[in-house]
Image (tube, rainbow, N blue to C red; front, top):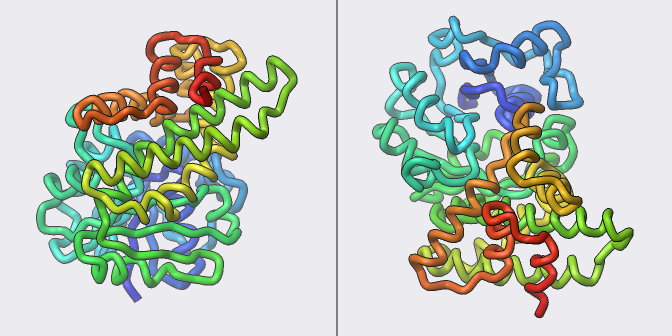
Amino acid sequence: MARFTVFGAGAMGTAVAMHAARRGIDTALWANPYDDKVLGHIREEGRHPSLPEHLPTPLRIHGPEALGEAAAGCEVAVMGASSSGARSLSEMVREEIHDSAFVVSLGKGLEPETGKRMSEVYAEELPHATVVAMAGPCLAAELAQGLPSTAVWASANEIDARKAGEPLVHRTFQLQFTDDVIGVEYCTVLKNVAAIGAGLLDGLGKVLDEDFKNAKAALFTKAIHEITEMIVAVGGRAETALGLAGLGDVLVTSLGGRNRLYGELVGAGGHPDEVVRDLERRGMTVEGVESAKDVRRLAEELHLDLPYHAAVERVVFEAADPNCILEVLL
């Protein structure tokens, strides 16, 4: 069975490492130099501070000084970096990753400086490795607990995605495999923006003491239509947008998570900039904020009219009234 190393001790990377270790895979979790607080908590408490479950005993934990040991013999390198940290993480581990290894990206969104997808960033930084992108409705806390979860693994050759991911397949973690890398990765950009919109409605509902169930259903449907339109326009497939990577991930992210929470706090009256700073102080990166800007840019380039996503962007960056999300229904 392939040897896994997860580089970066974020919540999702740690959850993947926990699942792999429980599956009997030889798995190492490497905490990078920015993971000091997390590493201390793991060593003292035996669990990640953002996850409810204790780490399984077989999982090997390594600090920044033990990169070589953590990476030794690695066949599947899981890159637990956000979209803004993918390139720097690649630079840290480049000399330790074997040319024949699979590199699995957990990051969602585009690189802020370049607008490149995560697979493009890793292909540039680790050109001899085979890159796989993971997406789908997979919350780290539930995967860490062993609750039923699903995900999509995508690579330019579907066989490569299958080779990298099949060791993880279990009745509690079902994977789908595809060669639609473009579709899968752009779904990760759009789904966070859509979830902010769902949060805005939740925030408005708190203020007005209303649930907006009908509006939520209609706006969710509108978001999925717009995501499908965008995915097809960038070269992906409609079935990807209507599957786990698109519709599925929008649903789970709209039910919970950082992006929905951000939207709720703004919808309830918080200033967009102040809310994001507060969440960042609490250790939560809201990738949908930057993605809202990316979606607007892409829509303009592709001459697409995406009123739902445009309304989210106006609230986030132009301080528009959150009620404008309801105007999309008109």
